[in-house]
Length: 406
Figure (spheres, rainbow, N blue to C red):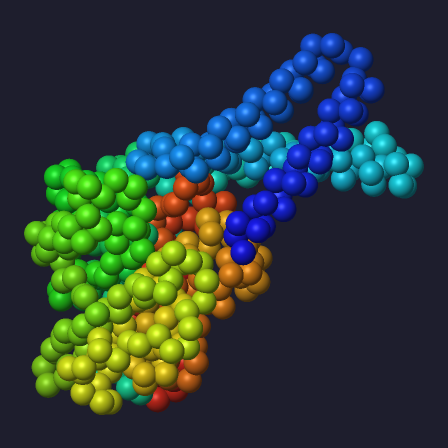
């Protein structure tokens, strides 16, 4: 689906490039302006073609190369969108007889688009926000009334620009929320275990919570994006990532459950592995038959359960198993572009996912999808700032969700 959309975009962008080439040749009287317009377009397309060749040849096999490819793709998309705006504005102008006015509108829209992209690469990309959710349920045990869970996800450490600064900001934001439990929903790395160097582990070890930090592995943690597996296999990569997290005291949940006790009450925390069927099509829906039962083998029926699943697509299977009073996920990061107007929100992620950001309720079950900290491929977040989520459990027979933003 994503590949098909990108191919359609590239074809339309190429046609608009051709239209603009001819229009500039006919109507632009300044030779220097014609040269700049045409040469810049040629360079963007050559860079884009070069990136495609590099990716097909397996050259984008490290985070520096991935970051470079991402920047080129971003420039390509900005160039394509700008040319589409000019072509569309020119067509509308000829249809309604106001060519000059529509040309001004086109320039203003392109300037606005450029400002949005720049904000996405600066302010929105690194400015962490805190979302606050109150989960009211009669199933919350008495001694867990008011229990504070802090959630983050998708750090993609190796791709972070200004890595240490953002990680320190993450730790400070989490610790300021006075958590009883902290949960990391996976994708702590982008490419392989080497991203968790001594400095990263030192910073992340500063996260504090009364009942510790709990985590699962995401698709990027599984080593499936490594080209060279001769020195380090995916299995060894997973082992190293798990070991690194355990060194700093985190609880890594591997398709199993552990328990948290408060007084006479106990809740179960379950980690569901990233499903094999989604490993090479991670933006598609999981089938209804995905098995999650083994993860709950030791959990008594009726016990309040928090399930951590990197992929929100697993929510249906979790509900079908009768588990997951509260399920927390990441993975999507709203495809790094989200529009919010009051209660209305939209993202391209809505084309691919049924649950892609925020809270979803189905009877006694609540799913919360965190928008993540880092980014994949493109070093940009348009309207979707990095997120840390505070979820407060409240014992209440009303069974409702209250929410707010801190």
